[in-house]
Image 1 (cartoon, rainbow, N blue to C red):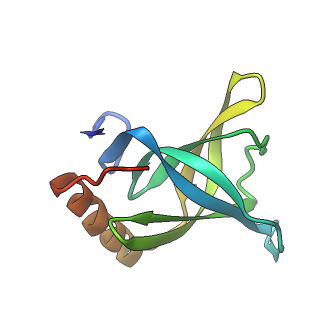
Image 2: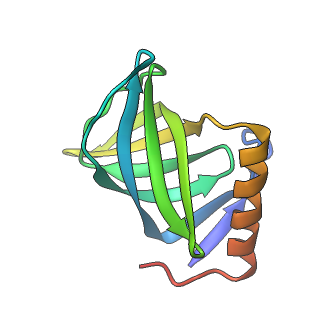
Length: 128
């Protein structure tokens, strides 16, 4: 159902990999510092950590540190809403893209997310 990795040579936070992708809502909140009002789309999260996530989408986003995206998803009945920037993009198949996102969060938010993800490891839910 899931596995964790600590890839200590590359990653600062442990990462939870899900065999069944976690659904999330995504919206662009700011571009070049200006707030924007875009629609909400759904994406599939493949793995998540306190520092970022990996997601799949048929939407073709640029790798742009000036484009802030907001991700909202439920984990163990907790709504997690975090902002981040795309730092990596790979085209997996025609019109299917995989993205790496780095969260823009403070230490307090990292602690909260870490606690939720630790609970996820202790009692993994059946993801739909």
